[in-house]
Image 1 (tube, rainbow over the protein chains, first blue to last red):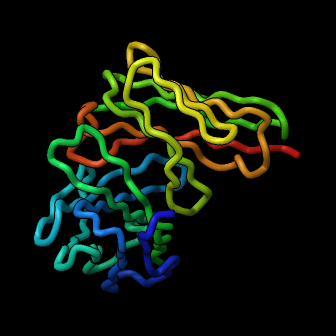
Image 2 (image 1 turned 30 degrees about the vertical axis):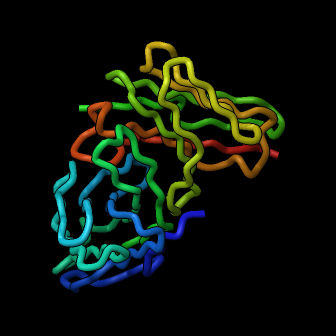
Amino acid sequence: EADIYQTPRYLVIGTGKKITLECSQTMGHDKMYWYQQDPGMELHLIHYSYGVNSTEKGDLSSESTVSRIRTEHFPLTLESARPSHTSQYLCASSEFSRDATNEKLFFGSGTQLSVL
Amino acid sequence: SQELEQSPQSLIVQEGKNLTINCTSSKTLYGLYWYKQKYGEGLIFLMMLQKGGEEKSHEKITAKLDEKKQQSSLHITASQPSHAGIYLCGAGPYSGGGADGLTFGKGTHLIIQP
């Protein structure tokens, strides 16, 4: 069982609002990720972090921002939500090893965001 | 960049029947992951394959990575309603998967008919 939690589970919000999607893990993992997934489409990496004070942009350009002040916490923020931001957002974590050629990701249950 | 093609896109199978899902990579795979996703939820790790010819099983699910390490198959024996969901294959960054993390295929939607 993965100990990684996302809140809220569902969020319906109006255009222009500022929102923060929460992600926490209790496994002590250094690496954390945010993926975006539209219905029926593949997951796209939008942000990741190697550890505290590290944030990197992923393959897919995103208007969201992230922060990593604590190891266990990796929130994602949208300053001004728009209908184009409607999607599912998935948070994941993994043990980070610079020598590792592979890494197993543990995923949260996701946040379904709808912007009206 | 890494591309993963999954087939079929969707599959409807009668309960009790066997089925196979395929994942083909545009590049050599140095790690191939299989995940299952229930609709609107997160991904659950199933198996990871690293070596050419490797085969792993968990309950009624078996996954293989071919010798050339460019294709993997996931086989379910005697399917049950609990097997329904979306199956995704993923490749790590050392397979040319992008900035970091895993790159995923679009998934195979599996429906089990009673």
